[in-house]
Length: 84
Image (cartoon, rainbow, N blue to C red; front, side, top):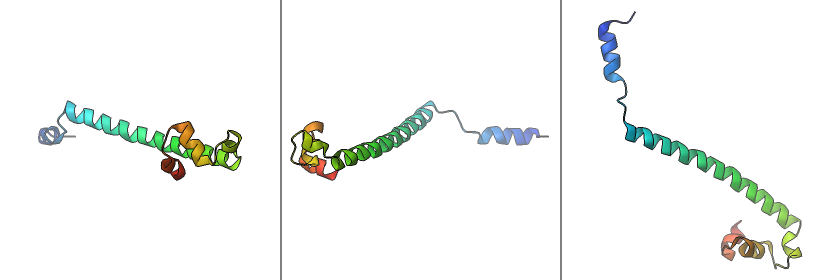
């Protein structure tokens, strides 16, 4: 059975509600969750690009390379497309 002194100590050491800290914790969780989703989506994107490249999909559309096709289709710089 808990004594009055133990109950008081437990109350004194209990975290004080802080809405700002709670909101920051929620934001941090959302950032971590979204980052995980982006990693999964990026892995899927790379798989699709590998298959598209292996099957020569870029050549069918008249591009000189997969990187050229990516640069055109995604609207990114050629160097960025080569990295993918």
